[in-house]
Image 1 (cartoon, rainbow, N blue to C red):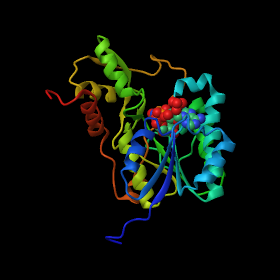
Image 2 (image 1 turned 90 degrees about the vertical axis):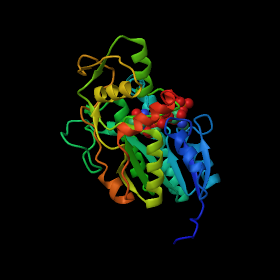
Image 3 (image 1 turned 45 degrees about the horizontal axis):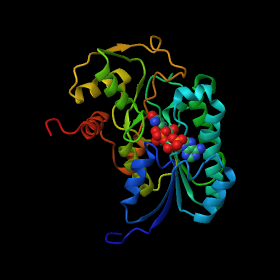
Image 4 (image 1 turned 30 degrees about the horizontal axis):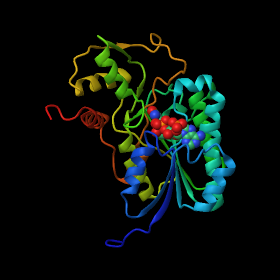
Length: 297
Ligand SMILES: NC(=O)c1ccc[n+]([C@@H]2O[C@H](COP(=O)([O-])OP(=O)(O)OC[C@H]3O[C@@H](n4cnc5c(N)ncnc54)[C@H](OP(=O)(O)O)[C@@H]3O)[C@@H](O)[C@H]2O)c1
C-alpha cells in the first residue's frame, strides 16, 4: 500500500565477508525495513550442525541468506570431502534449522551444476548433472541444492555465474594484474557464460525477496560471452593495449572440468521482479572504473 512502510524483517547472512556477502550486507544494512545479523566464517561455521541450529533458534530470523561456500573450484578437486562438507552439508544444516523456526532460506548456487552439453541457455527446470560430468565443486553444490530442497522447508535457490567484485580474488582482477605483467595473454574461448557483478547480484537477491520468490531461480548480468571475450573487454575498459589471444580449454588444462556452455536463462527472474540485470559489459566497466579511478581523474 503506498505510504505504508514494509514490516521490518530480521535477516541473517552467512558467509558475510565474501565476494557476494560483502555487498549484500551493505545493501541490506541500508534498508529501513531490514534488521541484519551478518556472520563471517569465524562467527558462524555452517558445517557445525549443532551450533547452526542453536544460533538460529536463539535469533529466530525471518530469513537466512547463505553466501558461505568453498568456491575455489580447482582446489575442490583435491579437497572433495571438505567441499562436500561446506557446500553440501552446510546448506543442508541451515535448511533443517530454518525449517524448525519456519524461516525462509535463500541459498546461492551455481551454473556449474550443469554439465554444459546443452547448446542453448539453461533454465531452472533443465536437468542438472550428471554428477560424473561435473567438477567436484559442481557435485558439492548440487548436493547442497538437494539438501536444501530435501529438508522440506521454505527455500529459494538462486543460481548465478562467473561472479566478480571487490573483496576477493576474481577473474577481472587477475586479468588486470596479468595484462600489466605479461606481454600478451591467452584466454579460453570455448567456455560460455554470463559474468555477474556481485553488487548487481546482491540487488537481484533483494528484488527476489521483495517479490516473494521461492524454489529455484537463475540470476546473472545480461548477455553472454566467453572468458576470452570477457578478458578483451576488461583489458579495453582499463585502457591497456596488451594483446589477448583466444585459446582452447584443451590448451589450458585445469584440475577441474568446466562446462562449455553454462549460460543461464534468467526469464523467470525478469518475469517475477519486472526487472532485468544490466549487461555484463556495463557492469564490468563500472567495476573497473571503481578499481582504477576515472581516467584522467
Ligand atoms: N565466485 C563465483 O564465480 C561464483 C559463481 C557462481 C556461484 N557462486 C556462488 O555464490 C556464492 C557466493 O560466492 P562468493 O564468490 O561470494 O564466495 P567467496 O568470496 O569465496 O565467499 C565465501 C565465503 O564463505 C566463507 N566460508 C567458507 N567456508 C565456510 C563455512 N564452513 N562456514 C561459514 N562460512 C564459510 C568464506 O570464508 P573464508 O574465506 O574465511 O573461508 C568466504 O568468506 C557461493 O554459494 C558460490 O558457490 C560463486
